[in-house]
Each structure stands twice: as structure tokens, then as C-alpha cells.
Length: 295
Image (cartoon, rainbow, N blue to C red; front, side, top):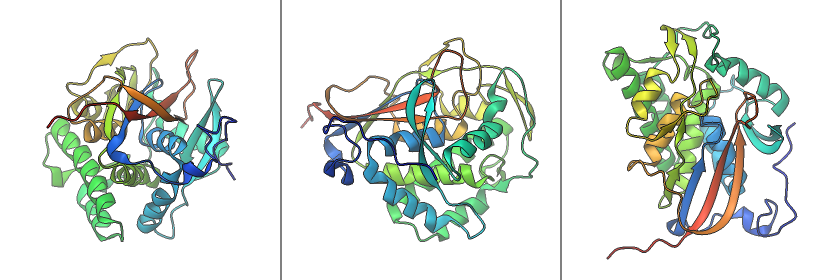
């Protein structure tokens, strides 16, 4: 079983200190996402829970509300990527999760791989599943909003209506639970300000149910229209469609400026891939903002 995220010696940042069990007042928070390796749904969830352990309980509760008996339980664990300790999020212990999630996404390299052999799940079916699940209403609203963003992007790039969209990635429970977990986190931190560093471009191609597609995937590019990009020379699918939808949902005004304030906590979530000379991590900085409210 994966271990809980490690506990640094500094009590101000200790993930086992008493204040880690409660969330700080969200209206005073500014959260900055540092996309070192990029962003995917599981990287975002892992980084946020690493920074704010109090999020783990509502996230796991929300997933239990959506999960069927045939689907694996979600877990948080600890691993190492690029020499750095990081939190991971998945359905199996960290060592096995790394292999399984890598197999799902390593088509994001300069080489190509085949997509999973499945016909996908209709957007309307997933929407009904989330609508029927006994979720807290704020969590449901955010999860559905993420799902709509993904469906609209797929409809746009494939020239179909939203209700005609069939997801292939989201047919996998690992991916659907990323949407639910991210929706739960967004609900729990309602009122906080969000920002992110520029998005790594990546490169190469991926073989999908629609054939060979370039990286960034067309749906990802559509979701991140207007966001700042950079090319660090490292190929691969650095931003998944779910990761792009999370950025679009949380940062409607496309902010990429780190907030001023006092750093309260930091967290690190890792992806499954390994890069040459770069840790595949997402860092989350939780800042007590010094922004001045306008009246």
C-alpha cells in the first residue's frame, strides 16, 4: 500500500501537523500551479492534496459516491520522480500505478503507441452518471463543468455536436475519477484565486481512436487557446485534455502571474513519465494573498 505523503521536519510545512487537518480560509488564498513537467488530472489532484492534506478525505468520499463495485479504489501514495519526492494519485500502489498510467499516456512521446482497445463512452452517459451520483452539489457542479469543457472541445475539433461526443480517455475509470477529484478540490477551495506558469508545448504524436494525432492534442490546444506556451525542448504529451480543462475551468482570465503574499504550504504531484534531465512534476503553492480588494 502507498504511504502517506512524507512529513518534513519544519512544523510550518509539516503535512502531519495539526493545522494540516483543516483548510485555511479560502477567500484569502491564492494558489499558483508551477507546471514543471506539465499538467494532467492526476498530477493536479496529487499536488493539491500534497499541499493541503485536508482535501484527501472529501476527494476520496466523492470518488466513493461515483464508483461502482467493479472499479478499483482510489489511493494517494508517495514516489520519486527526477530525484524529488512527490505525491501520486491512482487506483493501485505507486509502483504499479506508475507502470499502468505510463502505459496509458506514454503515447505522448516522439514515438507513437496504440490507443486502448475500447469504443469509448458517450458524454451524455457520463453526464447522467455524475448527475445521479450522491455527490455534494458544489462538487457535482464543478465536475460537470469540467466534463462539459472536455465535450465542447472534442465536439469543436471533430465537427460534431456535444451530445454526439464519445470519450475514449474518459471511458477509463482512472480518468473519470480525475474529473471528479478535481471538481471536489475546486469546490472545497471556492473563493481562492488561481494562477499557473506557462504551459510546456511538448511534441511528437499519439495514436488515438481517431488515428494519429499531433501533440498537443487538438482538444488540448483548443482548451488552452489564449494561454502562454513555452518550448523547453522535451517531447511528449505534457498537458492532457483533462489537465487543460482544469486550467481553463480554474483560470478563466488566463492569469499566469505568480501571486504576492506569504507562502503557507507547497505540494508536489508527479506524472507517470520520466524525462531526461527534468522531473515530471506539478508544484502547487498555497499563498496567503496580499492582494488589495477593490471597493
